Length: 168
Image (tube, rainbow, N blue to C red):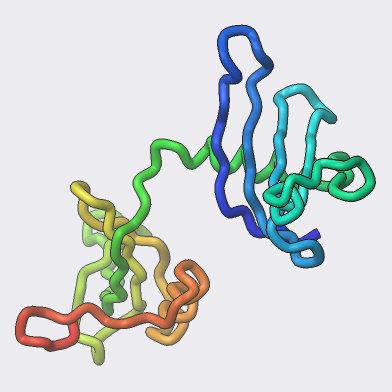
């Protein structure tokens, strides 16, 4: 099953109602969908969004097997809850780096920025607002780092430019 999650929101459902997650997603076969996923196992309602928007809530017309969608939706909800509190990256950069062994600690290495022709690795960094950068991964070539960037963002890598318009 190929699902693309659009949005996940948790609802506490008032004072005494059973809490649930509202999930919008795209299914490869059925298009935009909406699900209500309760915390209790096997309690999942799934609807096709376009039919729901037109008022179609009939069984057999706009009813989908919650037991088929449920495991995928619950996994997405679990991941979403794990990621809460993580600040998303607001920018990325790829930099050439030297891998240098620490003199007093054989087998321990650190990395320093360098000129492209000196690079041992190319590091993909994500920028976290108010915190700085975090290394996402080190790659043998710039092209490999750009490929991973494209997989993360869905866009080709565009190098950052300084105020003079030079690639950084």
